[in-house]
Image (cartoon, rainbow, N blue to C red; front, side, top):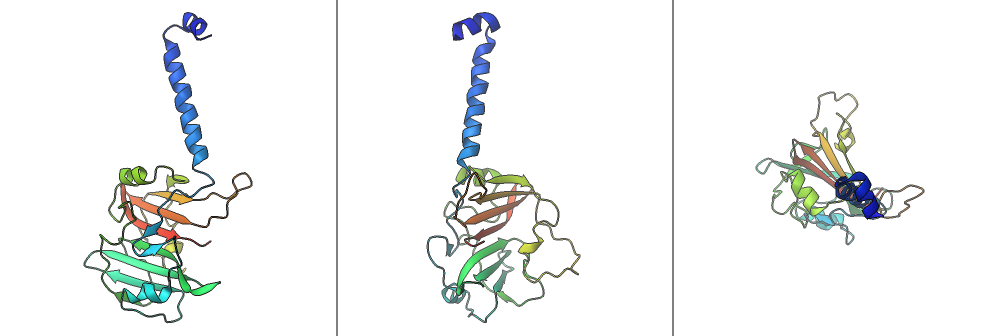
Length: 212
């Protein structure tokens, strides 16, 4: 059959076969990324692998639980800002999400000054604030979503932000999202999610969570 096609179509057949193989490979990669979490297992001292105690987490910053749902920290020396949220519904003594950024991510709430070491606050694969797009895709090649970031779409990540706050916040221009996609065809009960926000090809924020 291939010989017949070669006689009919000439030397174009190898290219045609090549394109078919590439298309099949891309289709397989797209299918593979759904139904399973391929993102980072941890960020800094937060991990998906075990229950992260709020008290222990805050202790590393010299803080204690005060009954709030979110705790905010800043390190202006290293240019990093961090907030941690608790499981407000099921376990108030557990940290369920982190948001690390190169810009302030808390408004109208108390923010504690501390040390947030850049070398510490990375994923196990070395991805942190300032990492490149290429480094992300080398570490985690199968994002569930890769898309432009509409202006203001990540405002919900800012703790304490009010509707009356109209000053623009630069969340970047692109995002990679890693999760277990849930729909009728690709159901999954894995709640882990990680997201990288980029500006001009560089990471400016990272969020990681194991709760809805």
